[in-house]
Image (cartoon, rainbow, N blue to C red; front, side, top):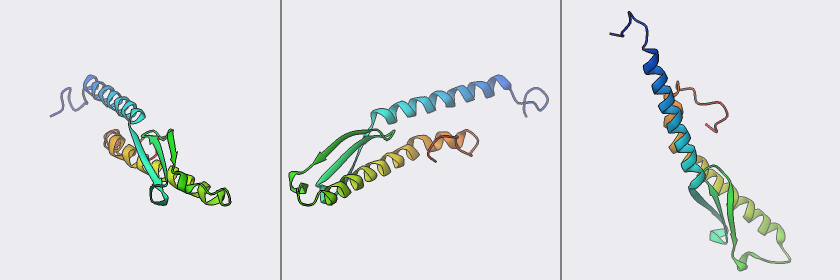
Length: 113
């Protein structure tokens, strides 16, 4: 039975909301510190991004550099960054998805899920 004649305990609801907000902030901080990689061309181009999607590093194997074909290199770079961002979004889903579901099941506006 709910205390107070059917009224939810507002203090308890407020505490739960504050805890969920803190958990979300902690998860976002962890995402900003966590790095994930993506690669293209069998590893010739590798991109590293944070879990928040910030590009941190780009490594290009010299074998990928052909002065006569910079278009292929550009495509490999784009593909590696996209792969890294896909991995970052998967990490976001893992870290933030359960928290967003706890906030009413409808997600949080502005987050990528």
